[in-house]
Figure 1 (cartoon, rainbow, N blue to C red):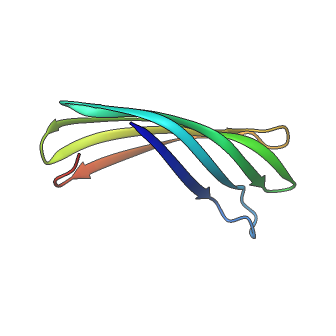
Figure 2: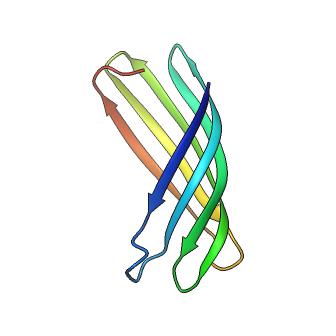
Length: 96
């Protein structure tokens, strides 16, 4: 399955680092979860403004039809301020 994602993190007008990117990736779903990966082109704004390569990898495990646990790894490779992070999610309710 293909996907396109436009994302924004941070507050470019404040003291934090922010990025705006358009990503393209692939995903696969199985009986107990899903996995996806995407990369693209983005703009990073912080102390300076630069072009970057945003990357995102997700994995979700759904052992029950109504509950699951997910992990997202994300980052942006750029010459000025590269960064990376991890997000953990708890899914509740009906879903894919």
